[in-house]
Length: 302
Ligand code: OGA
Ligand code: MN
Image (cartoon, rainbow, N blue to C red; front, side, top):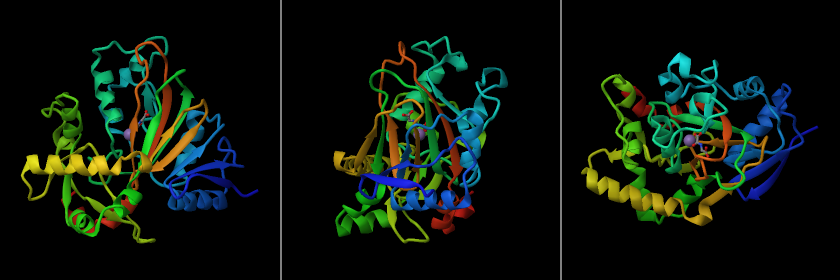
C-alpha cells in the first residue's frame, strides 16, 4: 500500500498515514517520504509507537546519522542512551526518569536555548539535514514545537531584500545562541567546536532550485558587517520570517514522530511546566549533505 500524505499547511506541513514505522520500510516508501519532504518541509507521523532501535533504523533510510554536540560532550556515566546517535530531549535529570532537573542545573539552562528559533547544528561546517523527533511522554499542557517556513519567508521578501540576503554570509556558533539567553559557554576545553562557521544566508536546493533563508539563533555575525548592524538586521529578518502566517505549531501526542528539514525550516520549543511535568522526546538527525552541495565555495572553510 502506498503512503498517504494529507496537507496540514499547504506546501509546508503534511501528515503521513498508511505506513508502519515500527517495521523496516521499502525503498518505494523511503522515496515517497523523501518526495514528501521536498513537497512539504515538515512531515508528521501520528501513532507510531517506535522503540529507540526502530527510530535509528528508520532514520538510516535517509542518510548518515550525526552525533549531537550535547551527546559528544556528555560523560559516559551521565549518558541516558548508550547509542550516541540518539538525543535525549527530556527534562529528566541525567536521564533519571524519576527526577526533574533542578532549576539552576547547567544542562537545563543549556537546553533552554531550544526556545530560540534555530536550525539544528547550523554551527557545524555541515549542518543537520532532517531531524526526527519522537514523543514518548508529553506534558498535559504546553511544550509544543513550532516550525517556520524559510522558503515562504524568502519568497515574501521584496526584490531588494532578496538581493541583499542573497549576497550575505553568516557566522554560526553555539556560543552565539547561548549568549542570547545570557549563558556563557566555556571555550577552553571545547577547541574548534565553538569556532564560528560560515554559511550563506540564502541556500538553494540543487535539484529543484528552490531557495530558503538559512537563519538560526546560532548566527552572531555577518561577513564584512559591523556586529551591531548584523544583529539588528538579523533580528528584523527573523521577525519577518517567523510571522504567524509562516508558522505551524505542533501539539504533541504520545507516539507522534515529526520530521523536518533544517535547510528549509526553523523551529523552536515552547515552554511548559518543566519543573513539575514530564516531557520525553528522542531525537535523531542526519548530516545535511545537500547543504554542502548548496554552498560548495564554503566547503574549503571546514
Ligand atoms: C531539538 C529541538 C524542540 C522541542 O530537539 O532540536 O529543538 O520542542 N527540540 O523539544
Ligand atoms: Mn532543535
